[in-house]
Length: 340
Ligand code: ZN
Image (tube, rainbow, N blue to C red; front, side, top):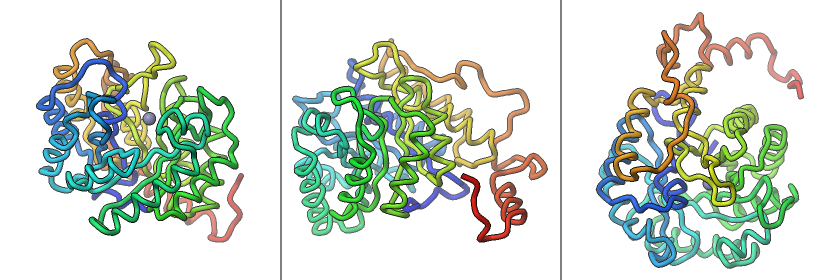
């Protein structure tokens, strides 16, 4: 994987609530509350946060304060500050604000591309190229990720051919993107599909395969993340409280819930370097800034199991991911065929 892991972590949990979550809620979260929320996420151990999207304020008033939110996030040491940019103008503003990483939504669905960014897919690849040229000029250290949106299906077009997804990921990398991940924008994915598609994408772009960005619209978010993990994915996008919902499915939760995915990995002995108690406490500034907005998540509702210990504190007899993989390495001689 391309992404460096935070110290003491086996996977990178990339929090997207302040962008993906906030852009789909009605209420506007005050800037000061956004800052408090981002600080609380950081204090829980999150080391990559997508803090805003750089889009015209008239289209998305929620993001009018993007530059101010970025400048606050930049004060948190060791945090990778990400922003979504749909076009060159957004990239200019995000680079001027000082972000560390840009993410560009590139639709695999032809219909979604026109609806989301008002460009054809081919035009969007040209946009990726011009954003890369700008990045190379102004801030060569900034990473650029192309997130392949509607990779698992589209509410407008329905089926999205897997060949289209693989081709778009390859074109983004050819245009200069550092990595390309797969986004289940519509919550259509299932674990078998996730495994198949990540495997195909990895065959195409290798270690430039980026994050799994899963939504929990139909309850399969965690299962899909685990399927992606089993295909070697180590970066997972999620949002605190599953903030966001889906505009096409009233009452459905949005992104994978950060609290739940951290619980899943930690319980499995896979280290996230995130403290669950502090993570659950980070819901408070979110609630304060968006009163009445529904928050989701089974782990915060149920609390942590009695005797729960984080992966980093688990004794090896319980089997940490590391010791499990060491055991596997001992048991299976290298070069042995993997079970399929
Ligand atoms: Zn999303």
